[in-house]
Length: 247
Length: 266
Image (cartoon, rainbow over the protein chains, first blue to last red):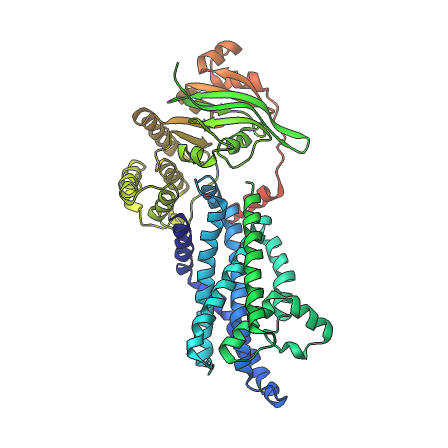
C-alpha cells in the first residue's frame, strides 16, 4: 500500500502538469522529424534502407533515457522544498520510498514513450510483427525503471539543480549519441565502436530494434542480459544513494 | 511521578571534530508541554532531527514511548508526529490527497482515515478547502494543514519546530489554542521550539535551554525566573544565554534554498 500511494502521487503530479507531458514528447519528436527527413534520403542512397524505421526504436529509447533521468529533478525538488522529510520520518523504509517513487517515474516515462510510438506511427512506422509489441513494452518498462532509479540516485547525491544538470550533460548526451540510437554502430570508427559496446543504452536500443523491426547489431540474448544487469546495478545504486540522504 | 515518554541519554552529534550536540540528557513526561529553547546554531534543530530519526546520533541513546529511536526506528516513528520548520507538504496535491498519503504511510484503515481526516480538517478550519491544491494555500493555511497531518495517526508525541515562524498573531493564537486543546483532550505530549519567548512562557510546563550544544538550564518558567532573579522568561533567557548574536554557519544548500524560496514568493 505504501508503494502504491507513492506511485499514485507521481501519477497525480504528472497528469496535472500538461506542459511536462508536451515538453517531454517535443524533443524526441523533433529528432524524429529533423533526422528522419533530413538524413533519411541520404541513408537510403547509401544503401541503408528505411531510416525512419531504423530511427524509431532509438528515439523511443531516447524518450525513456532523457525522461527518466530528468524525472530525478522531482527528487531534488522534494529534498529542497521539504516533502522528502515527510516520507523520511514515516514508518517506511527508504527502499520502499525509492521503489514506489521510481515506479511512478517509470510509469510516466513509459506513457511518454508510448506517445512517441504513436506519433511515429503517424509518420508511417509499423512494427514488423504486432504480437511482439508486448515484449517490446516490457523491455521499455524495465529499462525505464532502471534509468529512473539512476536519476533518483543521482538526485539524492546532489543538492542543487545546476549540479544535476551538469552531471546530465556530461552523462546522458554521450550515453545517447554513442549508443547507436541514431546511426548504425557498425559505421562507427573503432574507438567509438568500443565505447558503444560498453554502453548499456546500445543494448536497449538494439533489443528494441530486434523486436520491432527485426534488425540488430548484437545478439538479442546478450541485449536482454545486459538490460537485466543494468536494472540490477542501477537499482542498487538508487537504493544506496537513498540510504545516504541526510537532511 | 508520571511516565517518561521521551528520554535522551548522553546524546551527541559530531561532524568531523566539530561537536554540535555535546552529550545532553533530558526527559519529557507523558502529557507534558515541553519547550526546547536556544539561540540559532545552539543544536536545537540537530537534536530534533535526531529525535525524529532523520539524523543518526554519533553516540548516546534516545527512547520515544519505550522504543529505541536508533534500533526500533519504525516503532518510534508511529509514536510521534512532526511539524517541520519548513513546509513539507506536496503543493501539487490537494489537502485531502496530502492527508491520504500520510494515512497510508502510517497504516490507517480507510474508515479511520476518512473519519479522522474530516475531524482534523474541521478542527483546523480547512474542511471546505479539502479539494484545493495546496499551492493555492496561504502560509498560515499550510501550517494548519501540516498540523492536521501530523496528528492524523494519533501520535503520542507531537514535535513542533518553530511552528509559528512567519505567521500573523491571529493564526499564532489559533495554533496554540489547538495545541492546548489537543494536549488536554488527547493527552498528546508536545515538544516544541520557538524564538518567541512569550509563547513559551504562556504555554510550556517545562523548559530546557540549550546553548553551544549543552543544556544550560531546566525547569518551569517560575523556576527559571527564580534561578536568574528576573521577572519574565525573556530576561531569564538572556541572562542565561548572553546577549551576543550567534554566528551561524549556513551551508550552501540552505542558502540556495532560501534564495529559491524568496524568488518563488515574489
